[in-house]
Image (tube, rainbow, N blue to C red; front, side, top):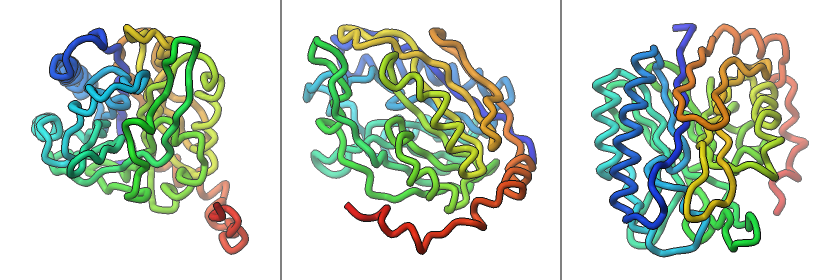
Length: 293
């Protein structure tokens, strides 16, 4: 299969952070099931949701309440529900969730579910930000909630393409993006939660550059809207698919719930890699300094 339709889901989280964790999860899961079905009806074969899709971006505050949102991966109820959905629709799902392992160990994780409902594995976010975002005490306080990822940079051989995952802040680090290419990724998904301001100008710059440097497609997904009570900024949407030439072939709106549909071409990956032989011309023996602390 040369041409594969990709579905990227960007959505506003509807509830205030004051609601219960269970209410947030129920509302978000119900909404995203509808959107996944819409993406599949529009021909998407691989569908990715936004970072920690089943709630608000609770990392705006440091409150232990949100630990209750985490689930085991695999085995948690949300993963099981979306495994059934993937099988029903014959689609691959990249499902970003809050993961708990054992007692009190948490990760920012994306599960990959194949088109027959099989759980293929997971990626855990490696690079964890911890920075303020304004004068109200809110910010990207992720070290309060997540340990750094420890599973490397896996690539999943799904029914439709070889899929890699990077999550949000990871996108500022080119090293992992290159490893995903070396591990065979044809497309890398980056589910995100990022607001207007500091990094917005990089949104359409860094990730198309990763696509060019590594000869694969990049799918960037972002939330939309302002989440209360934090109001730390507007999640500016604009989810997009970039090809190995760095061209944005599909992009969403800035402020609307949307299923963005784009198409990837595996022949375009071959064409890009043959015309720019970056993998052939690498000099890994000269890069040892990159691994120095």
